[in-house]
Picture 1 (spheres, one colour):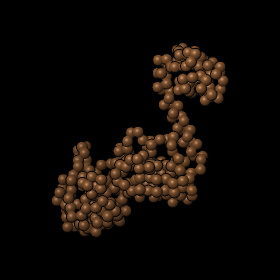
Picture 2 (cartoon, rainbow, N blue to C red):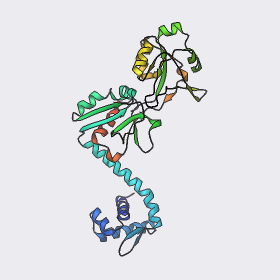
Picture 3 (cartoon, rainbow, N blue to C red):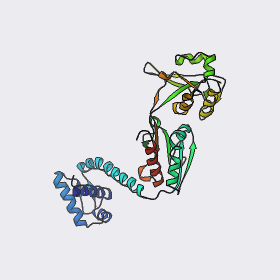
Picture 4 (spheres, helix red, strand yellow):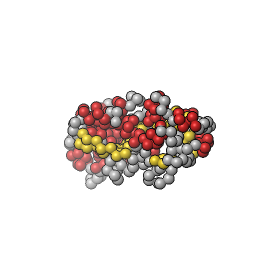
Length: 300
């Protein structure tokens, strides 16, 4: 597409929006005669009438409405892209308020935070740890970080982390006294460290896959927490079996403090995404943080 054709299409959208050549010409910074000539040229090239002109107003024809339906999203994407590029060149400053799960903070954010803050001394970051899916608009967060499969469709979402997996772990001492489970169904005979869901008050059902189908197992035991670090520490102490993220337990497994079981049954998770309401409202500080998180991810 030639540059003049793109300019004419953008001008057509302004004329349709303003419903007036006078107002559209003022918005575009051009004369009414030049704008009218450009619209006639566009109609001649497309061989279809796009605008109905009267002495008082301008409206779109049926063909013009069809063109607008595809044209407006494309122009909005271009404007959004220009805004993001412009934000990269702007000075990143001010506070960022972000909600994230505890695992997302420890696995994704903390590793890049020292270098990010050193590079952007005028930015401050407030992290609110919450395992629930928080309404970031109502609670005035700049962004949230959650798994990609649970983010609402109307959000702008950027992937910032690789796929993950759950891990069922226990200490060598625990498994010396209790035969390791061979399938998730065997967990009924074990002392499982359970997780309390703060918002609902119920217990988290451990998620597995069996023969390609999801399997939810409700476990029980003598310990209940709402903190994954305490669950892992209790498992290391031999107080039961815990269900945690594999990266949280990786060092303990490698160094022999924990033994992993049921790995073939543990599902893979879709990775973390940073999400926010609109590209047009993305502050330079958030754009800079997104860039840092993507650079620090194993995906990129």
